Length: 255
Ligand code: BMP
Image (cartoon, rainbow, N blue to C red):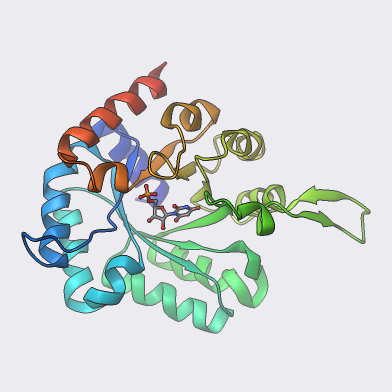
């Protein structure tokens, strides 16, 4: 099954569009790995996938620690995404993607700034060969996002001017990406990107809660999945926070 279909199935079966950003911190109740596994086990009924990044990869390492989290996510029936934001030359990018796919990740994130030929093409090739997904950054959630993703690009051949994120959305469509990241802090950008992508490439939206984005606005503007970390992981009762957020997001989805 393709990553896109796997996500769709997980979302429908669990009535949840929440991708948990498992950016754990060690707690007094144990180290990073046990804190992460505990978090996953307590919130898994309310989420449809898990995403991890360098928060866990650097201290735990891929083999051993992170592979244990991948195994746990899969045993709970959850797809797992490596948010590595691949951003190098093609030769290196392929090795990065293959390492994560071989470890068991179902998808990786990548930065379209590096382009296709000798950039992200080898990542998409590796993903297609191994039946995994690639999610592209289209407009990030942080304050300075406009300095890069929000620049106006002048095309000397056509004399056209377009926002960088619209060009990235068009690339996500042309490259048949499995997802596009658009910050939940910018619902108007979600709307514009959704106009380009329609239902062909699902929008993943981080920045809800801790970064000030509204779940309601992100979903009603066209986000299909919401990536949520601290609003769940730092809550006094993460499972209650996840349950509440799931309810709120699901209500919006079926409205
Ligand atoms: P939180 O809900 O705690 O703000 O976490 C958001 C997560 O999404 C983090 O793991 C962050 O690295 C990631 N993220 C983001 O916040 N904005 C983006 O534009 C892209 C991301 O991957």
